[in-house]
Length: 370
Image (cartoon, rainbow, N blue to C red):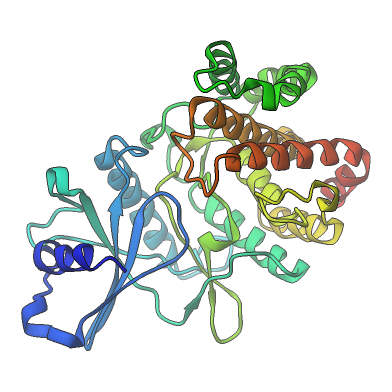
């Protein structure tokens, strides 16, 4: 870990959250936590406790106050539901990471050019996995994310602030891509013209999205339902807590379901170039459907249930569009490891989309049966 950053955090950040590192000395430890690509996240430990410290990425979240207001609203709602003493349908059964206030009773610490910081309760006995390996894991995670969504239905979605404008707005993403195709500022179009042509040929999907979304009720969505945003209990690997709530916003449940399909079901990693090895895992898809609809099947509308297959296709297609647009503009948004990284990611996601299309009738049966 960067020594200068460590020293800065100890000297200028921790005291605002009630920790005096000079008093704690070597008994206080600071280490990177997780593999997130947006915020910088650290685990702070001392003899009496632990907390998660994050530096909010203000290039992505341009209004961090909105992020924290949303987080506070979600936290208060879930804690209220967790305290209900009745049955599993009305009680929230997962843990919730509590936002920790600064010494001045604020949800975040704004140090200007030195960043915006916040602290969260550290959930003990938690374990995080980076990849779905079994259908059992997929079903547990899908049920947990559905449980999370179900218990946020009490909140009016309009109360949630839009922390990333047009995050899942397909028409905007396509317009952004085509503007970058037209300008081609880094002369990269030739390397990906065939993918641009393929994207623009998907008029049936684009039309379906345009016609379907207005028929669906708005819900509060997590918007980043990767497996590493669920904490498992170390002892028995049951679901413990849904985390990383920064992208919680008003939206459609098909977004969360589709993101699970995209990240749970691919047989290769998101940036793998072995496209001939990329398949959609049928057992994991079936388990995902079972877990998600066992929790939500009775409370969502028929149109919402039918829209989940659209979500499966939309999310990998749209992320392919976003990767390609970022590649063309010079890799401004996504962190890359090589010059072709975003192009490889785009090819991967669009190939996943193609594979879903070839198995459409087969996979829809799992949604119908769940």
